[in-house]
Image 1 (cartoon, rainbow, N blue to C red):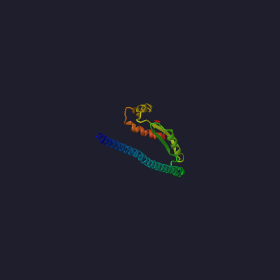
Image 2 (cartoon, rainbow, N blue to C red):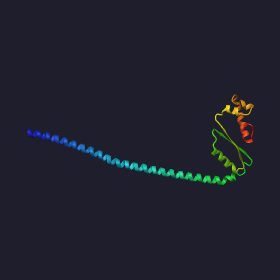
Image 3 (cartoon, one colour):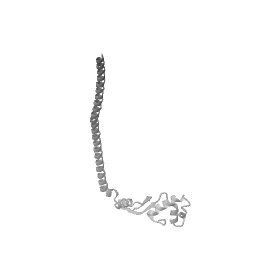
Amino acid sequence: METSRVAAVFDFRYHAVSLAAVLVALAVGVLLGVAIGDAGLVSSAEKQVRSSLRDDVRGAQAKEQEATDLLKAEERYSQASYPFVVGGRLQGAKVGLLFLGEPDEAIAADVRAALEGSGGALRGTLAVNEPPDTAALAASAPAGRYAQLDQDPKLLGSFGRSIGRQMILGGDLL
C-alpha cells in the first residue's frame, strides 16, 4: 500500500512542477514576444516620426528659400525704382531727425542715404531723453520763458514745438 501512496504523491508533485514549468515558460515566452514585437513596433513608429520630421524640415527650408528669394527680388526692385520714385521730390527741403532716447548713427546714415536722391538735406539730428530732464533743459535754455521749464511742466509742449521749428529753421534754443 505504501508504494501506491508514494506513486500518487509523486504523480501530483510531478504534475504540479510540470504545470509550474509550463506557466513559467509561457510567461517567459510572452515577455520575450512582447519585447521583440515592441522593438519592431517602436522602430516602425520611430521611422514614421523621423520621416515626418524630415518632411517638415524640407518644407520649412523650401518656404525659407522662397521668402529669401522674394525678399531679394523686392530689394532689387526697390533699389532700381527708388531714383524714379523720389528723384527731386524733396528738392530744397530741410529734414530734421529726432531720436527718442539714444541716437543711432546707423539710422542717421540710412536717412542721409535716403535723402541723397530726393534733393532734401538733413539739417540736423536731435535726441530727446524719455522722460525729458526738465531741469537740464531749463538750465541750458536761454534766459526767458523756457528757463522756468522745470517749474512749469505746461511749458514742455510749447518747448517741444519750438525745438522742432528751430531744428529746421535754426534758432536760439539749439
